[in-house]
Length: 223
Image 1 (cartoon, one colour):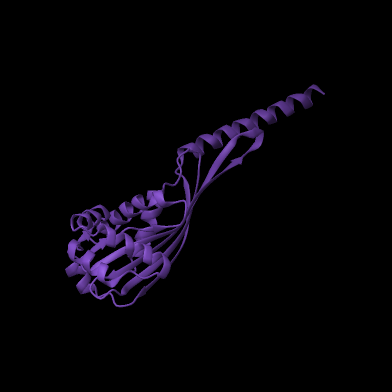
Image 2 (cartoon, rainbow, N blue to C red; image 1 turned 135 degrees about the vertical axis):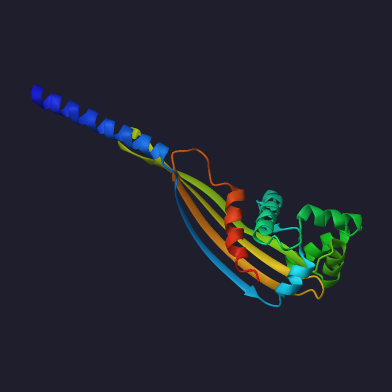
């Protein structure tokens, strides 16, 4: 009987030792990342030479209800990604665009353009032309945040020890490039990203990181 008890105790010690070793190894290892994405794009009449010569400006993004506060961060992260991916382009950031519109006293007309857009999906040609003129570029980029979600799930091991935490981020992002000269859609694309990370750390996949990953894949389709 005593031999059986000693054997059982030794087994428990061995299991606990192995678990502790596994936790230490996992703590020292990099996070396990998985990424699944789908990208679609359509070139309508975007001229690469004209894009390079005239530049592109960001106008106010749109978003699903409840995530309006993410619009500024979305524009900032995407602008940075575009500047890195295409350093030869002149890129006008959203704050610079809004400042130019306000200086030109176009804020009321700009607001009306977006109100009409929510009903029709069309930006006014006359207002687009004015925005193009005050920013000094031909093309205008409008981002749409279709959805953003973060989830976290713990994976528990023997004796209630947390082995890993799976953090998942999903993002749906769309980009339309409008021709400020003739009021047409010159290019559009969409990107759906599902990214997961298995880690012992508490940090989540940030909104900025998800946008940058999507932007990089989407911008590879840009002429």
